Length: 409
Image (tube, rainbow, N blue to C red; front, side, top):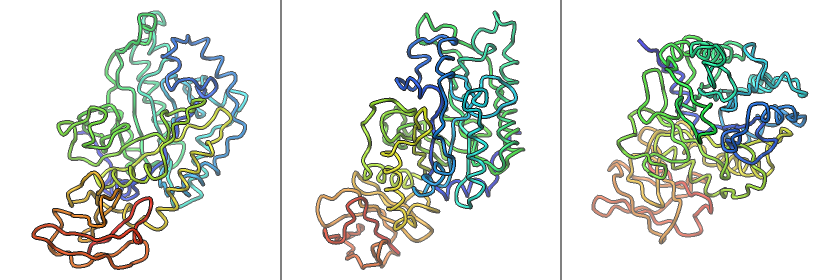
C-alpha cells in the first residue's frame, strides 16, 4: 500500500495557497536557455566549464527568505538538482555539486536555517527524475552501470533531502520522460526503466509524513502523489493542453513564471504586471489550487530587483486581502472572465478582476447571502437579488485597481 501525506500536512498545504519556486544553477552563467545543455547539445565537459565559473558570492539566504515572506509566500521550492545533474547542495552521493566549486557553501543548508528561524515559511525541494550528467542515466552500457545504479542515486538523494534539512514542505518531481531525445546528436540523453515510485513515495511519506509529494508530469496522478500540478496553466484554462479529462478530484498547484523563463535568462524582460500576477493568484485559489510563482536568480546569487518588486507588490495586496486567499477553498459561485470566488464555509469572497459596468451579476450564489461588504475596509456594497442572480453595484470609488474583493456573508 502506498502512503499519502498526513491530513495535517495536506490541510497546511491547502491553507497556505502561495509559494515561491526557485530555479537556480550553473545555467545562469551563460543565461541563454532554461535547458541550455539539451537545447544547444552541450557535452558534459563543455557544460562543466559553466560549473567552474559558477561562484554566487552575493547569495544571501536570509534575503531570499525575507523576499518570500514579504510577498506573503508560505513555502519555497528550491531546485536541489535540475536536469543538468548538478547538485545544489552538499550531497554525499556525487562530487558534481556546489560545495566543490569556488563558492564552497551549501545554499540548501543556509535556506533551511533561514526558514527554521521563522514560523511563517517552510522549505521544500524540486528534484529532477532525469539527469543529463550521471553516467548511469546517460550511457549505461558504456559505463558498465545499470539502471538500478541510477535509482540508488536518485532515491539516495531524496533520502538526504528528507533527513538532513529538518521538516520540509514538499518534494516536487519533474522530468518523467526517461526515453526522450532531442536530436540524433543528443541520443545519449536517452535512458529507460521505472523510477520505482511506490518505493520512492513511501520513503518520503515515512521520513516526512507532513510533506506533500507532487509530480508535475502526470496527467493522472499516481498513488502516493498528493497534489496534481499544472505548469503555466490554471485548471480549465486549456492553454497548455489540460482539459476536464485530465483534472482529478485532488488538490492542485499551479506553477508559473514572472517573465517567460524559469532560470535567469539575460535580457528576458517580458514581465507580467503586478495586476496580472495577483489575478493569477486569485484564479488559482478560486480553483482550489496553490500558486507557486518562480524566480530565477542570477549567477551571482541575486534575485532580480524587478522580481522582488513584483513579489513585494503581491505581498502588499495580501496584507489587506489575504483573508480571501489563505485558508480558502475553491469557490462555488459561477466564475466568469472578470469574476472568480473563494470561500471559507458560508463566507464567500468575490474577486472582481475586470469590469464592464458598475453592476456585477453573480450566479450560483447561496440564497442565504444577505450582506455584502468590501474586504479592505468593511464598507457596505449594494446588492440586490434578481430571480436567481445576485447583482452587486460597485462604483469606481469602491474599486481596487488591482483586485477588488467583496465579502458575501
